[in-house]
Image 1 (spheres, one colour):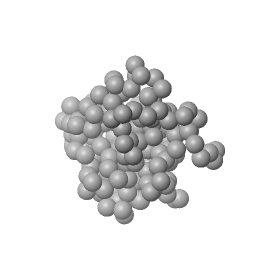
Image 2 (image 1 turned 90 degrees about the vertical axis):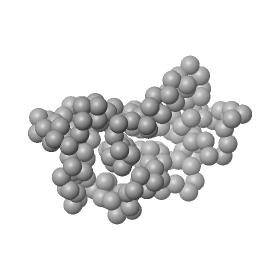
Image 3 (image 1 turned 30 degrees about the vertical axis):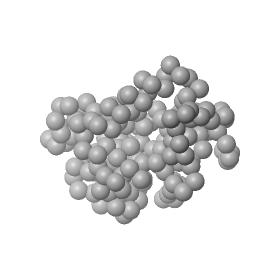
Image 4 (image 1 turned 180 degrees about the vertical axis):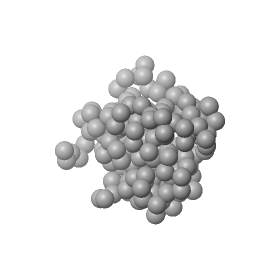
Amino acid sequence: MSRTRSRLEPIERREWDENTPNILRSVAHHPKLLEPFLAFSATLARGALPRRASEMLALRAAWNCRSAFEWGHHVHYARAAGLDDDAIARIAKGPTAGWEKDDRTLLEAADELHEQHRLSERTWARLADAWTNEQLVEIPFVVGHYTMLSMVCGALDVELEKGLPPLPEV
């Protein structure tokens, strides 16, 4: 679908500026949801997983959902978390694109959660070797959160802001 505007007219708030993402301007149509959504998102952003791991999961979820909006935003966050452009491009290519074991397992987990809504015993065992229980709980929350946001962006046709990278062609 090629649209130039969101399905909902963006809402402006006094405390927002030109850097406020369009997703918030759309979610603002449901004021009772906006504040808890922001709190949950902030909790995940300050979670137990290292930012690099969380951004790998977010980008893979965005890729699996083909969400240009989530991909565009998380490329920026992934760079800030230490992922270079080569690694970001390889996230779109998937777990077999030359990753070390722990990174490959994270991407496999994101793919399994997307495809089956669960983790295989093999993937769970590999994750459990590398992550704490708190981080193990957070992994499906991160994938689920960005899958949900991909759905919201797709359903509301939230426009990706100018200057952010599009989904890569793989």
